[in-house]
Amino acid sequence: MKIIDRLEEWIISLMLLAMTGLTFVQVVLRYVFDSGLSWAQELTGLCFAFMIFVGISYGVRVGAHIGVDAVVRKLAPGARRTVSMLAVALSLVYVGLVLTGATEYVSKMMEVGIEFDDMPIERWKGLIIMPIGYALMGLRFLQILLNLASGRTDSLHLADEAADAMKLKAEESQA
Picture 1 (cartoon, rainbow, N blue to C red):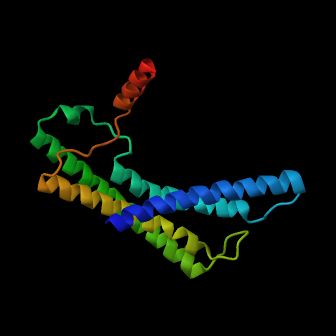
Picture 2 (spheres, rainbow, N blue to C red):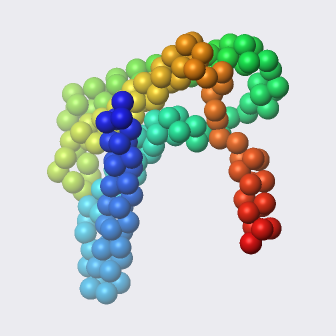
Picture 3 (cartoon, rainbow, N blue to C red):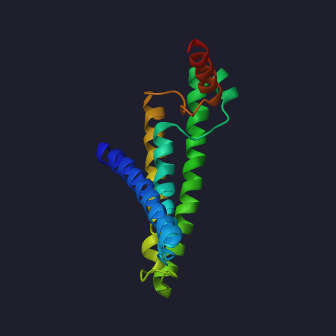
């Protein structure tokens, strides 16, 4: 799993770097040389899609997604674990539905063979990131479910914006 962890991080970083670099080059070409790359916007959008669909898996892994768990935090550890397992199971159902739809969509695009508007690449080759991203997210939810079932954790460990804001405010007042 460490390989997948690092791969996610590298893909997110490289896509952000590529988007930034490509956008910078495009701006320079447009405003300095009065030209541009016809495919730059489309490739930037594709990089953004890769970053987002890999990022959803990364967000699940590190607990960065926002969740409403004020009531769940008040429960006893056993009840908290049960409610968390139910939430993960429902999340897996959602992932399964979207993964199925994304896979069907990419399959149809493969059959049709349509290319991107400004790049000579078949659309399905770029859109394949949708089912891959949701499969990775499903893998992350399965990891969480296994940790909950084995007792290694008793909750989802979602992002706590209120605690983060309080910590930031305390750090600011000390400075």
